[in-house]
Structure formats: structure tokens, C-alpha cells
Amino acid sequence: MIKWIQLFAIILLVNVGYSQNFVSNVSKVGTSSAPFLTVPIGPRAISMGGAFVALSDDASALYWNPSGITRLDRNEFVAIHSEWIAGINHDFGAIVFQLGSSGTLGLSIISITMDEMEVRTELLPEGTGEFFSANDMAIGATYAKNLTDRFSIGFTGKYIFQKIWHAQASGFAMDFGTLFKTDLFNGMRIGAVITNFGQDMKIDGRDLRYFLDPDPNAIGNNDQIPARIETDGWPLPLNFQFGLSTDIINSEDSKFTISVDALHPSDNYESINLGTEYTMNDMIFLRAGYRNMFLVDSEEGISLGAGLKISPARGTNLMVDYSYQDFGRFASINSFALSLHF
Image (cartoon, rainbow, N blue to C red; front, side, top):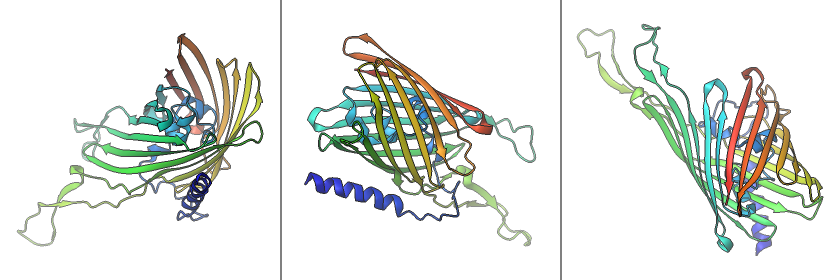
């Protein structure tokens, strides 16, 4: 039965991931809603170039591969802040609970915020005196379980919300991931995940209401007929990602890990992520990676990062992580994380 479940999961991932309506000569960039869902999470994963699907073994796995939280050996809480482009704040918070033989439970939230901006119009280019803001949010609940000592699966259900001034859109989506540990190449790990499989999102709100004159050539008619702009629904940024990760060196005092991911998104071309991590005494971590290799017109480039683990009390670990990512003409992006293992 376990073998059939594994086979079904693999077939499902491959079939859904590659059966998307994808045209090889058209990238379809800018044709999906909620693009903030594609912003990478966590300094560790970011500094490894986003090659994290097969390595997912901390609380950020709730974003990268929900099945990965089964590899945590204790409960974990993490808070992550990224200084995104154009003065945008990108924040992530999550907590993972171990339920023993019943599986693993995780809760997460992604938040995108920015400073208020002044409303300007063609007639009042210096400002109307009003201010508006925009924000995005995704709240997720994850359940994962080890089906064997090597194979695990995980599911995430999430509520997605976007708002700009008085208009908003919302929807629901699911992530599905698997993780398998082999006997090859020092226990090479294989991961696969489908993210953001859900309903189209359609923006609505009072900003879409206006008044019109149905017949401007007629005299004496009502020129203040209330109307509403109808918008189309747009699909979520569906993505299929497959990854491999293995430890090239794994001794008592040092470990060197390499990871590679292949991405097949619904709103862009395919690309490759590559990442490495060097661990000293399970306390100091040095990382480097490259994101979106072979992707045409990508602004993302090399990424670097480091981490430090300390034990403030028996049975607890405190982890501090930082990452730097080159973002081409958009300068650089810095990300910080503080996690507690208890």
C-alpha cells in the first residue's frame, strides 16, 4: 500500500506540474494574481539561491515544501523580515508543532506592506490630500506526516488576500509536497512540490464604482448613472518545483551540502536554482547560491548568507540567519530571521 501511495504521489506531481497551459515561446510574466506568493522566504533558503525543496528541514519548509516539517526534531518558531525592492516590507511568521506518530502541524503567515502614498490625479498632480496604501497577506495551515522512515508528504491550505486603497481580492489555494531520502550519495534527498493550486482571484471594491452618462449626445438626460467596472479573474502563480540535495562532506565537525532545484512556473520560463551550505560544528553556517539560472531577462543573481546557532537553555536552540541577494538594477535585498527550537 505504501508503494502505491508513493507512486500515486509522484505521478500526481508530475502530471499536474507539466500539464499546465504553457507556451514555450511566451513567458506569460505578469499574467497571474498574487505575485507576492513567489517571493522567496527565509535567509537560509534565499542565500542558497532558493534550492531548498529537497533540503527543507526547518520552519520555512511551510513555504518551500510542506512535507519538510516532518524532518524537524522539535517544535520551532520563526520570524523573518526582508527589505524587499521599492521600500516594500516582506514578513513571514510560522510555528511548527510535533504531534508524535500523528504527524506534524504548522501555521504560517506572509505579509507584504508598504508606506502610505499620496493620491495624485491629472487635475491635482501635487496631491488631493488623501493617502492610500497596499498590502498582501497569506495565512496557511499545514499538515505533514511520515508514511515511512524515508518518505513523507505534506499539504497546506491557505487563504490569500490583496488590497489596494478601497479595492481588494481574495481566494484559497493549496500546496502539496513530497520528500524522499535515498541510500545514494550520502543519503541524497529528493523533493517535489506543487504550490498555489487554487481559484482565480478577482479584484472588487468601491474604487471600481463610478458615474457615467449613457448617452452624452442627448440633452436633459441623467449624466450621473451609477456603474461598476467589471474586472476579470486571474490565476494564481502555479509552480512545480523538483529538487535534489546531498551532503558532499558529512563528518563530526563539518558538513558541506549542495542542492539544486528545477522550476516550472505557470507565468514564466523554466529555470534552475543552485545552492550550497557549509556547517562548522553544527553552530556556524556559511551559504551561497544562484537563483533563476538560464532564465531570460532575470534580475536575480548571486546570493550569500550566514547563520549562527546557540543553546541558551537545555533543550532549546536559538538560530540567527542573514542573507544578501543581488537583484540587478534593483540593487540588493537583505533578509533576517530569528528562530527558536524548543
